[in-house]
Length: 166
Figure 1 (cartoon, rainbow, N blue to C red):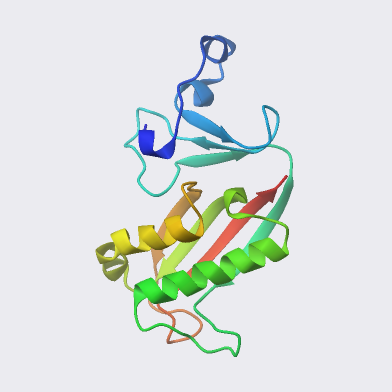
Figure 2 (figure 1 turned 90 degrees about the horizontal axis):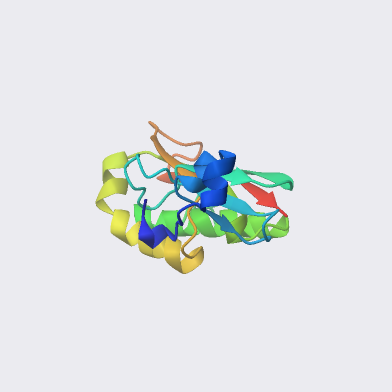
């Protein structure tokens, strides 16, 4: 369990009721006791860095966010490297989320497709700084998947997601 992630230990009552995922290291975000997203990070797994092992949603509206690349308003890929393209793709995703009524803390699941995972890993610190500046400290369930190429050949990264609007 990562203190950086803001996870909390479950209460004795939660443990007694069998609410194991809550007792095993999770944190509810917003929406009060009966709403919001809950980041679930069991302490027996390796502590997550920059993602959550699972995100459980309370009742709400699911918003499926199509993959976004570093396209500008005219349809051209901008940014020469992975960090610049990640920032633009994430900005585009957040704009689509906002237009759907979702904020950064509503992101429950993201998939990042990268044409060069080694390059993505080399720039992990800078990508994390972009994430914190644009999204903050909440991390959805997340995966990075290597791919040989994306729809636009100049794109280095694409980000798709699922948000839960409460």
